[in-house]
Length: 227
Image 1 (cartoon, rainbow, N blue to C red):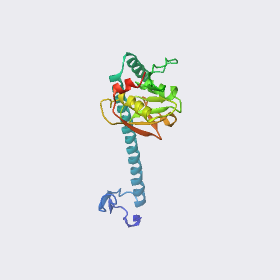
Image 2: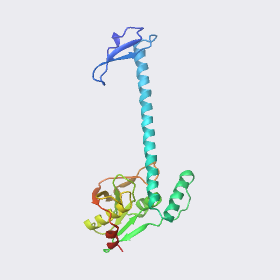
Image 3: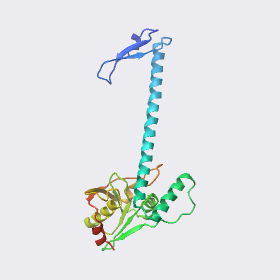
Image 4: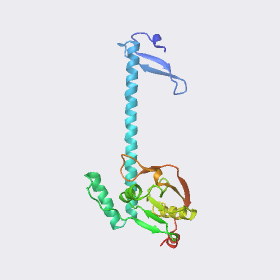
């Protein structure tokens, strides 16, 4: 440290700026304090500023999560029928007050394949949470479109085949904002690898050990391959 080079009573000191191209920076000092006391005060201000930056970053993350929640609700409302709209309204009521002690189990949209596999779709947050975290088995497969709002989609089958992956991926994409897109990336993994994001609204999850299938939603293909 060059602390001993700072004369007592100095009102500023010029030091090397290691962050902006190696130039010089002028730091104001309190001439009534000793060099050591000035240094302590500078570090105190630095720590306070660092804490403030951390709080701002947390607020930004919270705001981004809130925006994503409402974007997801908006996407769900576009695809919702009467029963799904009622569930979304119930979700919003629960956000403002206590959750009911008893609640009806959501009605989950279900597709059955010609081979006997079952594909289940959650059309709103209440359905998604119930489907993925209560109804699904750990060995079932979870499908979700990458990076955009969409339905939790669960595949329950004996043997996982490329045809089932394609069909389940297509159903997941069909129930998302990407339903009119081509080559939609859909992640899939077993339900045991899916975790709900704590302290967040909605049905946000994280998952690991996923693979990705690229599909182009085709309602006619889905209709022909389900009963």
